[in-house]
Image: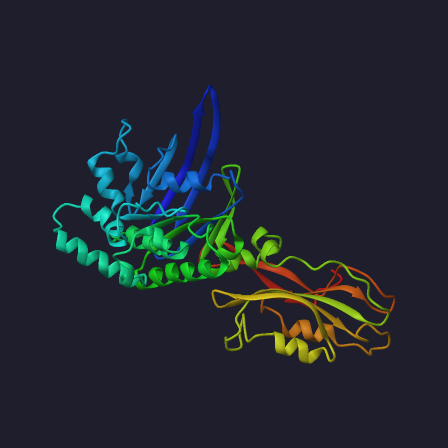
Length: 384
C-alpha cells in the first residue's frame, strides 16, 4: 500500500546541507499498522511528510495505493490537480491537533470536505456527523476546540483525517502530547478504525510502548536510515534486536548460593492458546511444574499479536546440587524443542555463581511468510 524506494531528503539552508533521509526503503502492506520509531532527529517526521509529499523528496520514489506520487509532484512549489486528487486518499493526524479555533468541532471536520467537488452543505454536515459519531464526539459537534480535552481534540483530528474516505492514515506523533490513559484510548480508536475500515496506518512515534500496543510491524530509524524492520513479533523474538532489548531488558547479574540454580527463560513468540505443535501449548506451566519450588525473581512477559514474548528469571532452590538432586534440565529442554523457548543457566550450581551456560539455543533458521528469519530453537545442545 505504501512503498518508498531509495528515498532521500536533503535540507539546504544558509549554505549548509542536512540529510534528513538517506536512502529509505519502506513497505507497508495493505491493512497493516506499521510504526516508525527512533530518537529525535532520526528523520521520522521527514519520512511521513515525504510520503504525502508535504515535503518534496530530494530523490527516490513514493508509491501509495499503486500511484507514484513523486511522478505527480511536478517542478513547481504548488501541488498540481493530480497530486491533490491522490492526497484525498491519504489522511493525516498531527501531533498538535492543528484545529481551527474559529470553527466548531463539526466545522473542523467539514473543512477537507469543502475542497471536494460536488458535495452540498447538507452532505458535508451529514458526513461530519457520521465521523464524529465514529470517534465518540457527536454530542460535542457545536463546541469550539478550546472546550475540548487533548484526547478529544485528537479524536476530532482523526475524524477530519477520515473525511475523504482515505485508504491510508498517517499519524505523526499523534499521542506524544497526551497522558498515558488518553494515549491508550486514542490508540484503541486507531486500531478499531484499522480493523473496521481496512485502513493502512503509518504511525510515527518515539515510544516503544505505543509500538507494542497497536503496531503489526515496526521500523527503527537512526540518522535518516532504517536500521531494523520487520513484523513486530518476529523482531521481539529475534535475539539481540533493539525492540526486544527495550521492551524486555535483560535482568542484572545477581549472586547465587551454592546448590541453588538461577535460570533465564526467554519466550520467543509462544502461543498461549495453541494446540500442541511448533509454538504451543504455553510452556510456562510445564516449566514451573518441572522446577519444584522455583521462585520468579523478575519477569517482563507480554502478549503481542497473540504471541507471548519476553524474559523471566527463575531461582530454583537446591536445583544445582551435586548427585542428581536437581531438576532434569536436559529432559525439560528436550520437551521445549521447537516451541520458541530458550533456557540459560546464569548462576548457581555446586560452586555457586556462574554465568552463560546455554541449555537451549538456536539450531537453525527458517524463513517465515513475511520474508524475515524466524529462529527455531532446539534443546539438548549444551556443551557444543
